[in-house]
Image (cartoon, rainbow over all chains, first blue to last red; front, side, top):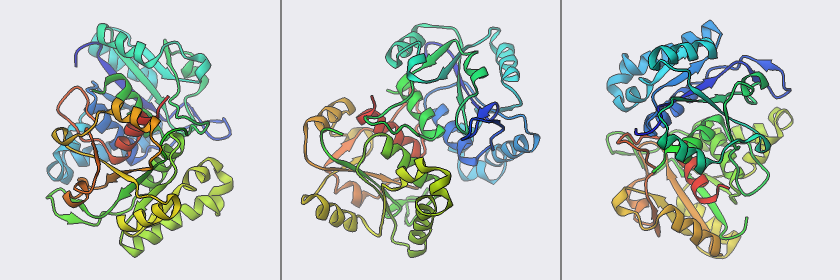
Length: 186
Length: 186
């Protein structure tokens, strides 16, 4: 990939539930697979899966290991190539430390928010990434979205993904796929 | 939605497995949810889930019913609005009959294929849909993709979704989300 090095992080905490309570959401098998495959397809550096829950970390590591070293690695090497991108971390701070160790610089934090808060357009940010060398980290939340304290740390807010109508409830897997396509698709 | 009425069909038969054998693939819970939510977000008419296997049809109907009439309908009305779009059919022919009864015309069949076979570009087809009134049906295959005999019935072939590299193994959920965004996204 030419342009800025970009990674993605999927946060399972702090995120909101349907009643806007801050919760730890559950790691799901297909969040790992679908987002890893999209991250690999669109040339990302790394896919951080972030949860403070130890048993959830273990579950994520077991799934990854199955496809990297277990029966899955020979059954489907394409999945191995995707899941090689996944790193499991406890907190966003741990992700940032890992990123800084690797690249020697704090990444520019990018989140997706309500329309009013957007600081860039997709075509504008796509162009910006092509000419930048600064590493960027795309943040996504599970459940009902990233808690306000995470949104507040973002340097860049992308507009929400919308269709022609009012309904706007994509899965996080679909939202990640669409946003990566808008930023890096052919 | 202005422009052409568009529906999507997810075929579980005839599709290829990893060894290019024609198989009936399994209905998965998240294929129902993610694609229904994307179809609703991007203003589609209907989401046909196509499988000839009776027990798979029953599974799909149970999931839909849970979110339409069961506990799920009150727990999460947004899911109900998405799953209201889903119709389960045995074969593509049954889908076409349903479509013709509803709209009095055979839909234009659209599939996604290898780069060489593409008959349109995404921006070109997007524009075409905006000015057309003819109903279109987007066909997607689970497993390792739609069997050749289905591809041969398509009137329009869209290019595959690609990133900057060679890796090109998105989940069908991600591919549908990206293609709907390319065709109908804001």
